[in-house]
Length: 162
Image 1: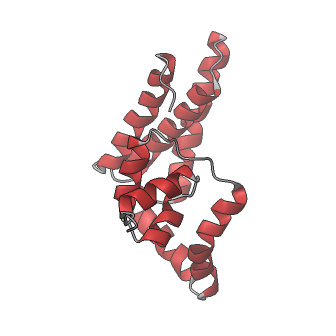
Image 2: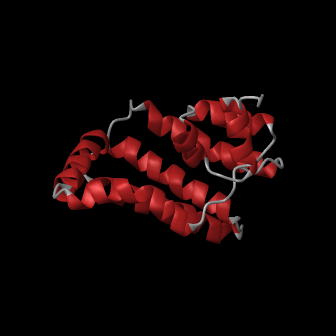
């Protein structure tokens, strides 16, 4: 008599073959959380995804966005929603660019150079500050994002790269 293969065993086999979580979930009907847990227990790292694979995974959503004739409505709704949170874009852009000028002038004056991650973090922090100043200062996500960008750089400086 042949031993029946459990769902977990099947997931492990497919993980060992290098299939993505999405592919395994489709084939086995296993919940993604189970697949992620088993992948972690097997000490497997997620494999990189090629541009082609990424586009294939995004295709259904992109087709829905662009082909249903509601692309402009979606963009307009997004702009309206963001505007209610962050204020008019021209105001946010003005504050952001003025702050960036100040930061870069300070770097030039001091002669300091920054790594790419430090520059990007400063740009994003300034962007978030401009959103706070121009829009809703009580929107906690903006404050959390600032802390996150600073944490990424401080972690990297301590040897933790994310």
